[in-house]
Image (cartoon, rainbow, N blue to C red; front, side):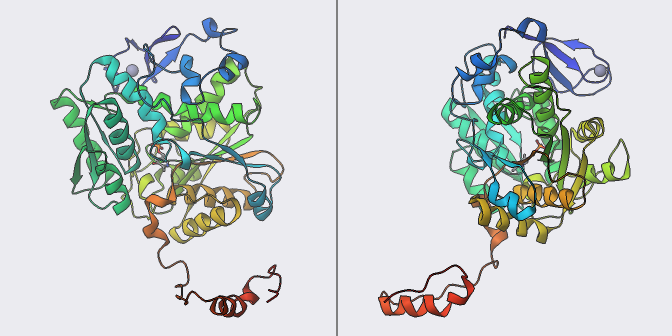
Length: 421
Ligand SMILES: *Cc1c(COP(=O)(O)O)cnc(C)c1O
Ligand SMILES: [Zn+2]
């Protein structure tokens, strides 16, 4: 960890050694990993990064690990898609999708934070790891723990989608379903972390876990050709990823790797759980916790741990916040699939729907580069798309039947050329 300085309280600045810890002893504010950027300058270059592995570990000098990476050797370095079809449809000049729906091995942005947290858990000597999860974090902890040979406990709200439950159970962790929402699960996990000597990745390893989210932002900058998008639209659940993408941008600016274009950050939430967006729109520094009620379950956190910092970054960067209703989320999932061939889950639908609304309302101008952060995969929550498509008739395996079917529906496909049979 040549460049890591300490864990520093985000409010009073008290410094702590690198140890399992969630908050400052004085004011209970979160602590954050800080680095010696001056020492890094000139050593961490575009070329040194480009020579690194095709994974999130190409940015390891800006991650808080001592040892070699121990887990997540293939996580991160997901595609940045220039979304020209979607751009045309929405009416903007330059649009990018950062596509973490393909992240390895569990198809969400959580593979980034877990790679760092479990490497750290091994460094600290833990044999058991766990998490409070809305689904995707449970998948990722369970999968990475299986590969690393760690015992895992994943705690989830009882009402998650089937795909989210099976997708964790398959890796063999103890899956604990809790009668309550995510905020109840999270509270319980704080008590579990106190009682047992376990590494709960988003509790006592939280400062290390959250640093992993920066790699989403580093990749955007590198993959845009060492430039920053002017506008970045990010989903907000617990409030980890949005401030960390911004931190990533600031670190690259500080190290002289990209030009400072004063990037603006935008928060996306479901209308059924939008405490942060509400605070932003009302001009408040603090949010009121909510009881979630939305199909976007992976971002349904009514009392986000880092919500306060999301609001701060939005205000500082002069961005904005928007929310999307459940029907708008479903429409946006279909839009992304139809235009770019990407099937995202409701969190991604939320982000795209909010981006489109921000563009329509003029908050995001149509002629500046925009990046929409897609953080999860649609195949884990197909329930939300049920009933969206016409039922499919079954035909006999005969060419005449096929022709009949195609000709009957031809008027719906304007570009179809007439069959020559
Ligand atoms: C966890 C999650 C997020 C964002 O969570 P934060 O806690 O705000 O970092 C976004 N999308 C998906 C699919 C997630 O699983
Ligand atoms: Zn403090």
